Length: 284
Image (tube, rainbow, N blue to C red; front, side, top):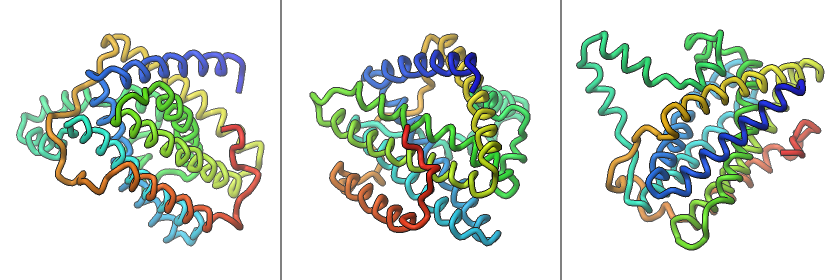
């Protein structure tokens, strides 16, 4: 990584850390932060499952298994955030209902709404790639491995930092802190298998080049996101409404969350015991 990219990475990471910490600590903005995380984590599940099926069809059993576990982890992460919202007597907006409403609008208005909802971060991160290029049936494996490796690696650090700013003075914050630390460990593990997947297909020098390329893209995307947030005064879009969802029942407790994490980790340890390599990220 060149010095300028490293510097911008530090500046951008600092800005993101400040914004997320402030919004997570503030009771007014915490629900929308949690809903955003729930949406992102849960939304990744079908994509990862489709990739797992593709890998299996291509005869790569190792990758198919890793992706299936990744999908299970993301589903559990979404449940953790949903439970955290439930403790605040909030739930995420039903976007399926909004989609049905949007389909009844005029084509021009629908198009305008879709453009406004595009993520500045993803637009910058995947610049040059169309939605079709990134579809699970078509995405180049190296593009997926490298781009997702960077996202997972940084997410592991971001969630750990967010956990540190939460107080232990109330049950909701204490439970959320435990959940965030659990998620951070999962993201670290995901980053490790994705780098290993690259090393199984590319020489070491090419792996490093891919990581540097997507690190540079991440810096540009992060700066675009921060600029967008500051232009909006740091305000997040409203993603929640009052009331706890029925599907997040009493069994979604912190103890069971910890149990699920333990089970997931045990499965992963057993499956990867013979396949661990030096590519695992000791520095994460």
